[in-house]
Length: 296
Ligand SMILES: [Fe+2]
Ligand SMILES: [Fe+2]
Image (tube, rainbow, N blue to C red; front, side, top):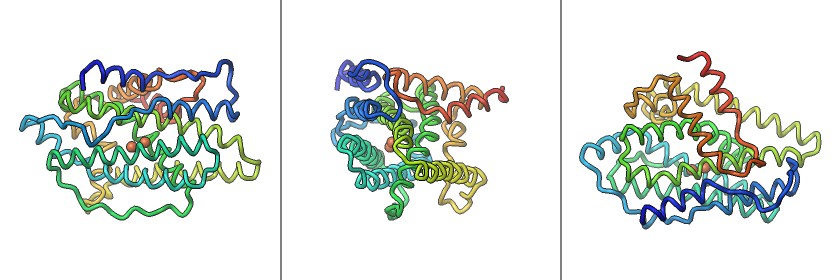
């Protein structure tokens, strides 16, 4: 594909305004139409099967294939795809159903992109586990959504950094750019879904829901602390550690504070082009700003 075509697709994906004018009340039908249409209208229809994987220099090939992230990346997409699809199946609202279907299909496509890449470069993967259908579909959807909010925030910064240092060859950056932006759209969609959904609930169901949200955060924080403490000694969880040690592994010499700045800047860059009436995912950036104050 020519550079202009790519640039146009990239721009279209990152810039979107809802067609309905005026203020929009959170939790209203107009709000639902806004965040669903955002996801549906900004879909990038690339086909993983036709991606031409750039030939890499021996050096770059070695760097890419030895990154310890590919197992976890493939498995994360596999899990996400199943969890989103399971939740989608219980949603009756036609527009929401359509948007969630697209979200799940994009996760499935991420997995195909990664599998094709793994194949193209001869990366050895651990055998995939069987993915379990969550017994509580809403729980599965919440865990996927919030984990994307955490992981994408850091991935944005690491990706940009790997691009700047040339750690990722430019052609490969172009190939993964839509995947990154898709995750930005997913967390934007998710943050607005949460805000909309909680306003549909009766008091009692709302309390149950907020408890579940809190449990999801605790679960994800616990999962990441566990990983940081080195659950990986047996080698199995090794690459889940990447969010935390990723910057060392890709040879970036950024101080933690500089890396956070880059993540924050990239987060705004990826979110700024969307309708200002949509809520942004704020929790992780806020925490990052707080922690940033204590770092040099
Ligand atoms: Fe994904
Ligand atoms: Fe996603």
